[in-house]
Structure formats: C-alpha cells, structure tokens
Amino acid sequence: MKFISWNIDSINAAVEHSSDRGKMTWGVLSDLAAQKPDVLAIQETKLKDSGLTKKHLAALTELFPDYHFYTNSSTARKSYAGTMMIAKEEPVAVDYPTIGAPGEMDQEGRIVTLEYKDFFVSTVYTPNAGSKLDRLEDRQAWDDAYRAYIDGLNEKKPVIFSGDFNVAHEEIDLKHPSTNHHSAGFTDEEREKFTLLLDAGYTDTLRAKNPGQADIYTWWAQRVKTSKINNSGWRIDYYLVSNRIADRVQDIKVVDTGARQDHAPIELTIDL
Image (cartoon, rainbow, N blue to C red; front, side, top):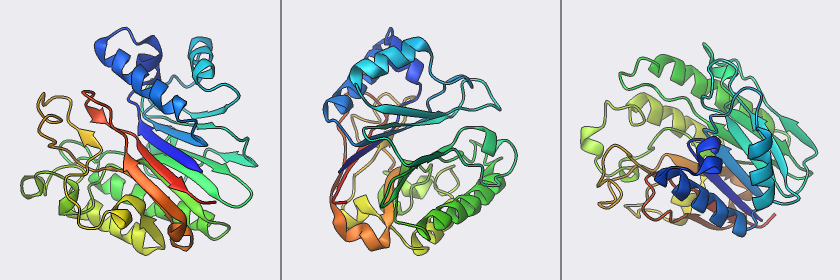
C-alpha cells in the first residue's frame, strides 16, 4: 500500500493556483494524485470551519475520482491549521479526536484518524512552540496527550501515523543544529518528547531505512530564498509505524517538489 503525507500550506491556494506559488502547489498535488495513493494525508489545510467549499470539492474530485474526503478544520481560529485525509477505500470509522490538549489546540483541527480492518492510519499537525517559545509548555502537554492517544489506538491494532510533527529529532535532522538549540522545533524539550514517542513502541521509518544519512530534509524556509538551493533544511515531517509492522515497510522517501520551498511530501510504501 502507498501512503503520502504533506503539509500543503492552504488547500485554497492550491485550488485557486493564481499565484506562482499556488501554481507550484497545485502541480505537486496533481503529481501526487497521479501516484494513486491509498491514502493522502494533508496538514495545514487552512480551511474555514465549514470545510471544503463546492469549488474545492469539485477540483479535488477531479484529481481524486472515487476517493473519500475527510476534513478536520479549526473552529478556534479562522482558516488556521486543519488536517485532511483523502482515501481510496472507505474506512470502517473516522475519528476527529480531542485529546485533552491545553488552550485551543483541540479546536484547531489537528488530527484525523481512519480505522481499517487491520490497522489505523492517522495524521497530525503538531502545534508549533512559537518563535519566542511562548507556547513551549503547552506544546509539551500536547506531546504527552498525543502520545497517550496513539498508544490507545496501538493497543487495538497497528498504527501508521504521519504529519508535520514540528520537531527535528536529532542533529542529523537539520542543516545547522549548533545555532538552533533554542529555536522552536529543536529545543531539548521537544526532542525529548519525540524520543518518548518512539520509545513507546514506534519506528521512524525514514531514519530506520536511512541510518546515519545526512542532508535528508522535508522543510526549507520560504523566507530564505537560497534555503532549498543550498539544501539548508529541516526534517520535521514523518511517517511513524507501530514497531510490530516496521519490518513490512518497503520504501520511504521525500518527494521532490522542484523549486517549491516550505514542506515536501513524504511517501511510504508498506506491505499490509
């Protein structure tokens, strides 16, 4: 089975594709559709709380005919955060969970989970700790609550879960670790919470398949024009799986998005 996960940074910008960036985003989405994934997980949809508009749905249905669409949009802030699943096969059940996170995090549409007969597939858009780390304490509480949620799923059947986790786990996962130890996404606190998640029984599929390989990134800052040219990036997007199915992973890779900066999709092939 083929699973793809991507922080798209606005469904509307992709569908409208009126700007140069929007055109690139639509091009990437079209390329992903051509791969005919079993499930495409999308983060940072930035949809209104009413979800997909008729225009959005028409455009996406053209790209993904006969697929099923599941959106979880923010009700706390307009056109903010949000997650989505596009699935070839209709799931047994769909969950848009609240996990007991602090503040408005549970109202920001950050998780969608699909249940199938033999596994769960879930996606997450993890809250950012903030440029001044003003949300770091809440972020840590989120990490604990999220780990408990995934563990609850894992007790029932294996879990395949992906998304923008907003953390580079190890120094190998970003270009300039020495200057970023106090930056959101690379604080000791965030990295320790990600270690706890893995230690709870899950495998970072890309690192497992590429141990010790540097310069594999999934995000390049838009504000730095040369970030992607110089491959000065971060790996903050992941596919994690329950340890008991990790040996079924056939391939995991970062999808090439050409000149488009920001997040790149990741693609997992697994025998299920």
